[in-house]
Image (spheres, helix red, strand yellow):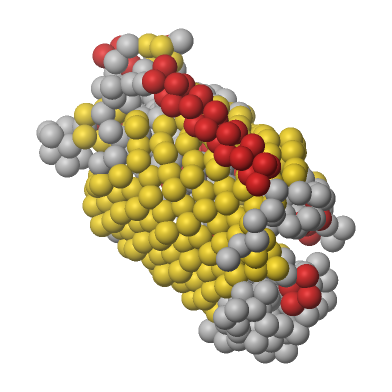
Length: 492
């Protein structure tokens, strides 16, 4: 049974949750819409569609100078009754029809070489979703690009966070969205710019694009050049043209195509991401169509960033593979199944640490993943399971993590909102050991106020204190932290 300490602080935390949820429900009522249930949990469809298939902006009316349509009807794609994805239309003064998938803030004037595209930026820089396949967003946007001249799309995002928390153990705060050493005592309050990142996506030719992302992170503040406070988080080139072929290549530093690691929580990432998300340099290729997404990548050897690791530097001796199958043409009536494999992980060494790039294991400890997501009208169910194939020498146990989640969408439109519940857990120790698990419960509410702003409130209960560094000596299975996390995303 958990030790009961600091009950007054816990009551304070519960009171904050109640007030926060009450405010959010009131905001939802104030901003309630009667639009059709269209999916805002995925990002705007950037697939190739003839603009003439869309209704004009004038037929939908304008809101603050922008087309106010939520969806459009297409006659030539799949029959006269086919209802397309969200319009996210161009400005009403564009002088033409709504372009399918074109984002508010995306100006598709062929004479402009420097552009903003808010939905594309939102998707590329999002920390919650599409963690492992963002190259597809670049390729789809590239296929929609008109003209042969180079185009540069720029954008940025700020993630602002406020946390108020209590713990039942002095100086032990297991919430995975902060470092264990950030706080002391039995209570914590914290306000910060959690992340600020910017990107430049360049469509150079009809078959080549380059993506670069600059990140400031108040969480990843290590002295190592790969994970400093200010870093080039991703930089890679993508070779392919979906108008010609479903195959593509990429080379550079990017999120590894392994697993899914999305979450239905509006701000806090799940335990599966913290345990198994990978970032590495290498080369890969893939296939993409309406049903299948398949990628295979070779990864540079040695200790990578976050998860990936292999026994020797200077060789392409690590690899990752990922497969996703999607059933259903409507995004609010869809089933997605996926699986992946990573040859080498950091759970191969005899020392629990991830700061020394020269420390890597003598042999491979691989990992595999399965994931699923089901969307039925206003309900979304999702889950994922990831595990190593062998024991981690540090704890003499396999490392695995899983998440089970559900969400209810009050409105899936461009100014939609949802409530969610997520349970995720990571385990790496023998049953009954102090370092057996890290558990996380998140109950959240998220609201999108515009394409450039969304906010959230979450109650997070973190149980088990098992930090990666010194895990066998400082862990405490009875620690419980209750937190209120307020989040604000601003997107350019």
